[in-house]
Image 1 (cartoon, rainbow, N blue to C red):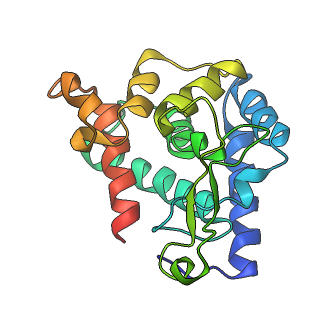
Image 2: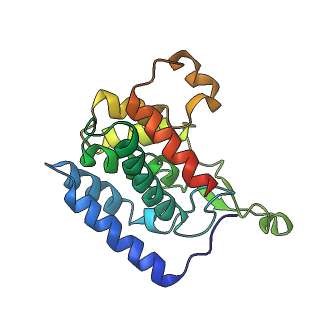
Length: 191
């Protein structure tokens, strides 16, 4: 389980998140903000996984790290190819499928108390229909009418790279944004 997360750091991350969302151009910032508010800001209290960032607020912390990583990677590898708006957007929203839906959280506390110290959260089997995190993320974005370009769509869809069998048809056909998001996501889990 990665990370120690103080209340002060959590508060700072919520403030940083709000600044980034408010900086998104056009109506997209409002659309994203509405999605998060509609989920009663569950984004701020959800874990990011059952292993990495497996604590309340882990999803927020991880998403901010991915947003920061993707900006740095893009500046180094593809300067001036993507707007900061695009980079921040895919970085912040790439895992919102981990919110689940309004009725069911994606992750729930592990009911096995002995195992909880090693795997504090498990995927909620009550959450239907089953969708991958990427599919659920894209579904939520379209449900809330958040503007997503084709390149952003591909980046979110392929965020897990070639680790996922269903991504194999895209091998060597990924747009640069998809590769940047994947590596920013992996780097966040590794640091």
